[in-house]
Image 1 (cartoon, helix red, strand yellow):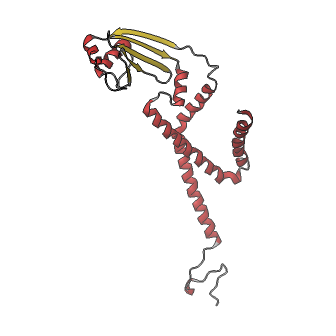
Image 2: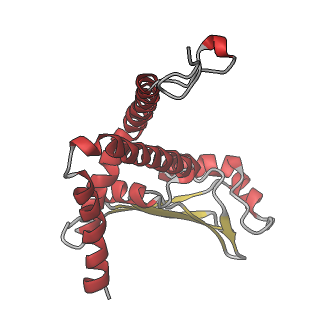
Image 3: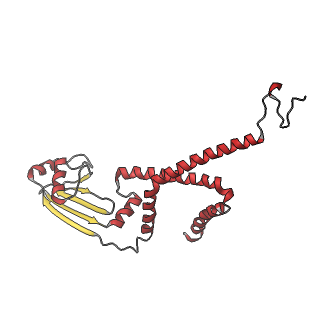
Length: 230
């Protein structure tokens, strides 16, 4: 009997490895596809969960920023004044290095008197005064101390909650923690988008409108940018 089989391999007793049959190859391909599908679904929903709240925040503030000129807000300005005690004023007689913050005891007293926290904030030192800018999301503030008399002058401008969230969107005066949050959030969005793209590819043959819709999402902003943005 001939050792050759119909699929081009040999029988086990013929000394050669038998080639896998077509059903076996199909089962292997299906198993690999299911493994990738499971991995993509896992990464997709995890990244979606991580970025869900942030994505909602950035989408809403994208609208408010786009209509900033039509959203009216009345800034609330609060001014303050006080006098630094003489023992603490003595700590301001010597001019430190450029950008040095207020001494801790002085910053504590300023916060108690005008309700502005200046701890660790860089100061602008001149012969006449120490000026500390205290900007933050949705607000601007500053405090000035006369180095001769100890007179404290401050101003705080609150532009409201919409401005607060708009500044978070832009990362304006939001600090290091928010800076790193934006990076992590952006990375989660990238993972969410890329895994979504691969999931579209895996399901596209059953959904004929997949790639036309993806192409539309590319063409619309491209056409607007080319024809209407100058």
